[in-house]
Image 1 (cartoon, each protein chain N blue to C red):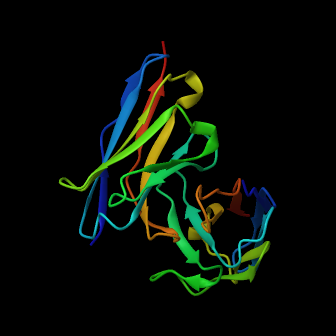
Image 2 (spheres, rainbow over the protein chains, first blue to last red; image 1 turned 180 degrees about the horizontal axis):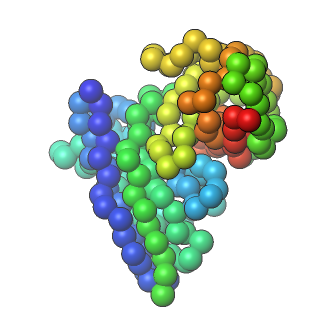
Length: 118
Length: 107
């Protein structure tokens, strides 16, 4: 069974960075897309970008260009999302999810709460 | 980027009612459209992909239709456990933009 397990909750200061991990098991890691989706409190789902580990290059939504970096480590089947220059509006639950190339997101991580507060 | 809209933003219906949610894409996306269900405090769950294909394990009262720019999600007989927010998502190209969501409640 495919599982995505994310790192724990974080509290960060404005202006700092956060790096969230997503370890996958039970399936082929390298050829699937790992997508990062965030959800601010009481708000909808927002796609930040994704990566196909075998290609190694992240693809980012325009809103997050220059502030987000998505990477993957094929040796540990783990994907990472780093968001920099944090502000209070970045307070959200961050999810990783897996999908086929040009496919829906069929498996999701449990979510990681990131709180940005001074 | 292709924008996704949904209507209504919320609805309340009785158990057993037929419920229909609409999703519209600002550009044609063929059938590269998925629907997700998110119950309060839970992780989103894939219900339907390719506009009309039911994900394994999803009850048959859920169905999807549409192609191009206009899509619908139908719950044929609303159940109490269907209380959730429903999101459409296009996935023909990155980023996989989501619609704003439709909150479904039971009267």
